Length: 625
Image: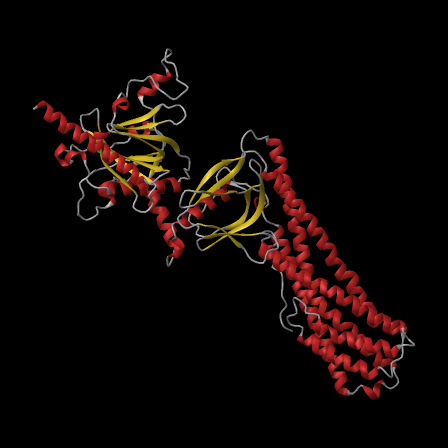
């Protein structure tokens, strides 16, 4: 006999939309089989109860046997032999129509009883297991909804423990019911064939044994045909028993899994995270806005396909495109006091969708996978190897720190460069070969991801007589240049990081610093950024807190020796600052920012400020002469 279609028991726990779609095909087949079985049983009961109308009853039976071919079973693969056998039996019934006499006991035992047992036992079992599976699925969805609403902070450990146990119990219950349901549907494919042929086999034997002219009508070829049908039924029964044992063993093996499989966020303390993923699939909660201030969360199945993020609801045949991931950015966010949320932002800076994972491990793996996909690694010949190499290289190249104190403990390269090397504090383009990364930045140079407040702010915060102006104005006279500056331009920026560099002779040092800072943020999952107002004047660059109007950092424009915007991502901008050290030397540091506008506009403002300084110097020299 040809092989039959089966539901994979290994897919029961994941309960993916693909498995649900395949399950619906089996359910449709079972429904069609139920309808056909009822019709076939009615025909057989008519034969059993219509002694005086035997001719009409056998005619109806013959027609019903031929109707099996027209049922269009969703899982009709391998039914050709069944169909041909039923066709042959239909001819036999037509021949026996004029000679058939009802023998109630024999027909009841050999024809009607097997099909009734098939309907009452097998089909009813499938229907009951279907209802139990539906109830278990609904219970699991409700428990996952309660678990997803657990707050990120101020958790009640007792409530959390109860909900986690509830989720594990519901998931185990759904897993058990799905395994039983899948096994019943798989077995039904074998029992269907037996149930269709066994009653007719009994019917034929009854005709031979109890009709006087049976011996004349049934030749030796008919006997051999019936024997082959009996062998076929026996072989199907053997296959069913073997498959039942195999499914039982698989069921026991799958149910013997560890508790971690059922419990969400089981290893929250130290999860094993794969940062080299280039594709990912699983259930996430999608945030949808239903009004100006109202939102809903929907649990859907997401998967990546090439450079696209796809979504497939339950029951859908295929997934739909949700987000193009090429050159996008992803970061963890705080959203409605929910845990494990992250946001995908489009390349133009527009906020995209917000998703919630069910565990810390899933959250970080989704972020890493989307970061890898956004780099278009999937287009390479061996994307897995490229992802591993990039992450290993980035891990070796960067060691993040979170305060200036740690940075001061690390040795910073300093260079005693003469003022003649930087002509008029302007960038001098060079046509030399691009230097290696080690020539620009020392390997292992620490990266700083926050900004330390300057001494002026510390004094302001501790000066009791200082009155804070609610209109954002300041009485601080530390920066008097803002009163008479010829240039004042404000830009909204977010600080990404800073690090010491070896040279300021080329803008390549800025590009290399950008690469290392972004790589370090992606590897160590540092997604928070401090937003500031960058004030460009003709004398200095000032980073101002947008809420308190306190100056976070101040850089003299004459100390800025290089500045450039990223060649591809125009929103990235950086500059190199030369600062004197207490030891008498000088240090070089590169600061990297992300702006809301194009970084070239910031570079233009800085260049304009430096030109104003040169004009003022020239004017001062003329006036002295």
